[in-house]
Image (cartoon, rainbow, N blue to C red; front, side):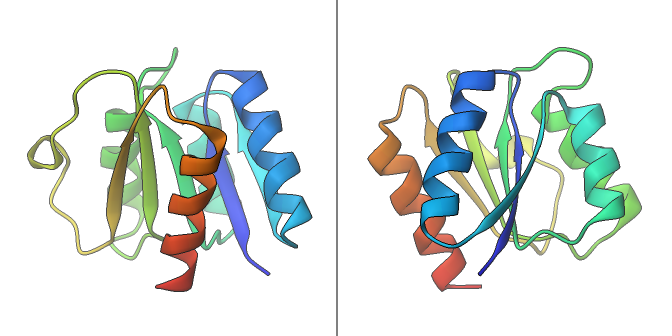
Length: 120
């Protein structure tokens, strides 16, 4: 069982991922923006973060920067983005960051999550 932090402003995406991950025996916590996600990251120790890039209040890139200021040892991160994202734009880090372009099918997102969790 894994604890997955889902940070996405789209409630439907979050709920779909939560339902699918729970059927696989995983536990999920969720946040509607990066600021809320940071709070959860500080209070819990997730095995994986699923992170949207475009969100209100605090976007995904700002979340990554702030999270690395809190801890250099972050869980693997699956970035979901509707815009072109280049890993070079991310802050330097030792943690695993995978990128999946939106729109991605639920099957593709779930496969990426399972792949990352298998390689933890």
